[in-house]
Image (cartoon, rainbow, N blue to C red; front, side, top):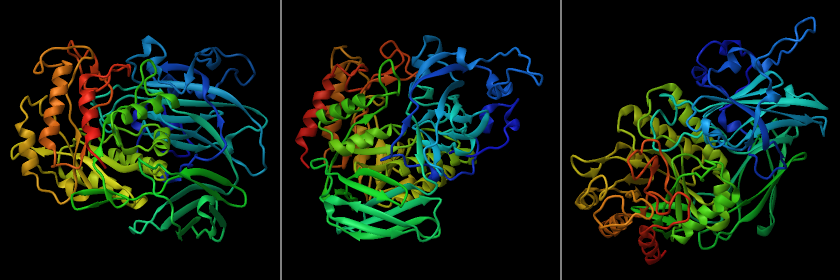
Length: 593
């Protein structure tokens, strides 16, 4: 979430993390940057780690180099003498000394601004910065954001110097904190920095902030629900919507809140993994225009069945972290395409993008390539569910993710949590997230990895009644060496809605072989999946192996793991397919839908 801040003196001489609290700006106000011309600020930025948060405490952002008489002052900070790093990137991958660094990193660069229109507004858009980010322009603190994986935007207009150089500073802090989302402890590496694109957008005074278009949830497949938001507009502003391939061209008008809504009759080809049909959708006002590719489909449930476009579908899935060797979370489009291709090679029709929002381009590619997606925010393990700061952070991240990807046909599941204890505070926390999903996007299903009550061997979690698809993580054959527990749980669980296995797996060191009961061998991992698939057949509506690739995790410390979770079906470098890969591939090919 971002906010305009006029006074920053109160931020000094205190713990900076204490300022990542509830902010007033509505996260729904961020610019939807798709379909616009952009000016990229990616490239080399000056950078330093800031171990003691001296940047704030000594007001280095003021760039005072002379006194009132114009005499030179000694300075402890000279931005232009700092080293340079590539943006986007994670600082952990820039220098070995930064590998485990948790704290503040300061990025800065200048850019020349030349106005192109008398009433133009300039908006800075960041794809993600982990975890908290403050934005400074020309010595002024103009915005801040919390949440390490969702996009945000800050308007620069009032603080830009025309026809001159402008200094932009991003202060990013990845310190783990008990009131954050995720919290102190989680099973992945805490990469820090600005690891997604940084761009400038020029827009008119009255601009299209967001457009949402989808099949209306009426099961007729002939009605499009449209909602377009125009920033700076009042009532009666004309807005045009065009979909040439559907011969659709209509003019709508905004209401007093700048929102134009309508339901339009159209009969599009339905998007599916087998037929990922996309339509060019254009939205314009008298001074603004955006364009994107959109697919139309419906995802629903009927009793225990999951239906895509009215037809039952079994979710042949796999989980996947966002990570690439040597570059952390800074994946290129080519990297992202490879990930989806390797999931398709496995026979998957859906991917669970775990355990946080991945780059927006993954959903765009999935739209194009025909891959369903489960997207989620990092409400992971134990959080401070009763803490207002934690609640606000989770609700903000959920809002930003839904607003970012609700036009993506590939996204069919919003995940609101993973393996969280069933308490009253947690239930209220999660229900609020489900409510956000349904309010902003009634066309998709909600899910969470719910709890299994081991005492009675059944899925018993009060959250089940508030989500559309119940998911469970279970590791029979690994953390529990026998498999009978899985069969018992599936037999005892009585639900009125779909159940999927959202995680199961076993560690296997790539290339390590032995007997099929020997832990950390490829043979044992393959046997575990064979048994899991046999026992779960006919009882579930989806199966998601944990995980596609090995990934870094500081909590995995034995001699086979050495800082990695080794449950991947493919090695960390994405080259070696373990024996279990063939087991899942054969299974996926045998399930027809």
